[in-house]
Length: 587
Image: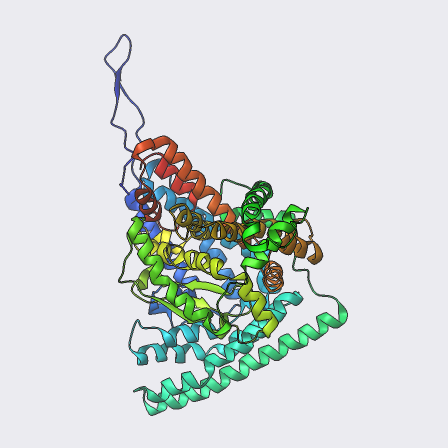
């Protein structure tokens, strides 16, 4: 990205009838001052959110735990309001293109943080907000320094576990039943972070005997604190179920619209993207009907075609979905497919890949399970670029045979390939590697979820357009998968803004989006536990695909798919609305 300074040469004009020179006002670059401001902003970010720094790969804050009390909350509010005042002193007309987008990202982050604090207040109703187990496991399994350095950071953190959970109990005043249930499950899983693996690591280390003894004491204290929190939550849950006084998980249309504006950061409003999703659903149905009609005799020649066209599609999907891996081969098959995706991207020259950035497929850690997503990616931050990226896959251990079969039909032979494109190559994994190489630290740190998810969704269609496993069956299953993305938006908006019932949600997901029972149940659960995030996939995809179409029309024969991909990714995880402006203007 070029650092273009918006400096207009001085212009002098001769006044009529005299020789007096009049100078036109000249914008003066504020880039140097803004670079200093960005450093100040990031320092304040880590001061108020040291846990975020650790996730970003900056480990000097690893030992710090912020107790979620009123004093620390007010400290954050004061710091961010001061940052807002300082930011307002800059004029975007006097900043280069890199800093203009950074300015808007910071502006949105500050507004979002303050809104979450003053209006959303999820700390009062979402017990799953609180947890220390994840940080313990992350530090223990990290590779950024020797074991003893990481253990001493953990030891310091464990000193605050009791105070942390005691404050959490005070904060939770109006919990929802759904988030309380989630928090219980995740907290129980979190107990493993204080288990034998940590104890063995301490014993195997070169810590002093006194440090090891203190460690054992703090491990027991932390387990007691977490068990007390679990007991508190279980009592809350019993009370909520008995009295029926739980807060609704629905946040309402007005709050949803504001959260969409801040989280998604799109040119579209929540209602606009909802209406686009409704239209896209109908388009996909027509495409799937056409494909199903051509494939019917191949798979179901002996069965009469249903008059109801969606039932015809559903019947064919059910038949094709029988082709799937065995239960015990689900994770091994994912590992097997990744090199094939790398080879295809290289063969088609779709973008440059970095073979030195590791991608590790692992079982989803216990403390991360329960939120409704069966696969995810945990990427290192920009300060720790060479650390492993994890492709988390939840095993089917806890599923009954019937549940496992339903899940495997959902992630059948074709859909599993699309999943790997989305989560790994050239989806999330590839995009996040590029993001960490962005020259703008702000763009890497303040990553836009709609851009990140939108890119992963975009790559699914792009790979098929370029010929990956090009068959009618793959296109039918891709359409089903993409329909899920579309219905994510419809579900998310409808649940929180239109009070959609579970019965209507199941009809949408199973009868109109052709999902298996297990998948539909998981998606309903996810919609009750999150808000707006399910809209990010379709919103980001729509913006990216539209941008590519516009650039193709503008550049004609000069358009290069590889160049588009690499330039798009070079701007870090910025909102697509800002990337579009830069790419359309040729910045």
